[in-house]
Image (cartoon, rainbow over all chains, first blue to last red; front, side, top):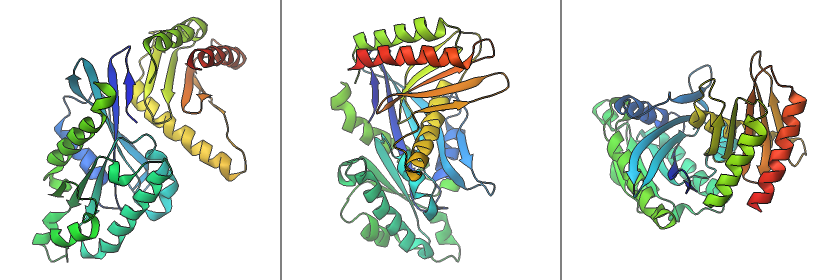
Length: 201
Length: 126
């Protein structure tokens, strides 16, 4: 739940990038960090394994300015994608206000996307949160691979697999070169702000 | 959400009992990683936002470890450094108090002052 401090007039919002391992969650944050370097006062925090995989989370806070007299800070987190780290994924989801689900368009990852989304639903339930009521944006990442000989899923299939019931905004993206990273971010921020505005304003 | 009266009382408790006793930095935060109040003696800089995010992760991981060994929680954590040490203590079910202090103040005094502060905070928050 967003932290609202009525004394310092600050709002802190937690957005988590969730999805299967090696899907591009950290790459999204790295691109955002590079793009908004001016507005980001602190270093991006990354807790990684020796082979550069996310061990616990990445963390990137940045200010989006004032909304109705409140200073709004967005805190972006990623979760570790590897299957064995579900306990840590659950910890990172504590207090989440909005989620970007980063799916991998590679055909070989189809099952892992679905499994990860199902686990997200279950993990949120442990905090009495409902995925169907949570601000959520889908991102189908690595569409640049469609130009290569790697077998990929078309967005219609991904929509059917992951978004037929949720019906949330979805973006095709290519996080490694920044394609649609910022539109995804803007969408989740605006959706999350709308969902918490009753609490704040 | 805390009201202004509660936040003022929390600030006063931290400033008088902890910063006043010689502790360098104090962060009162929720377990989601948000800093609710942060105070410093002004002598050194600290990126409190990132610190709070990492502290929440650290505390949550230790909490999960406690449950694995059959403890309901480890309510107190302490990290000792060469020049600076960090003391973590749970305040309520959802909040933590973190105190960073140098060699000029003993762990015993920090524990005493933190216990007094938490007692006062709980009175304010209840």
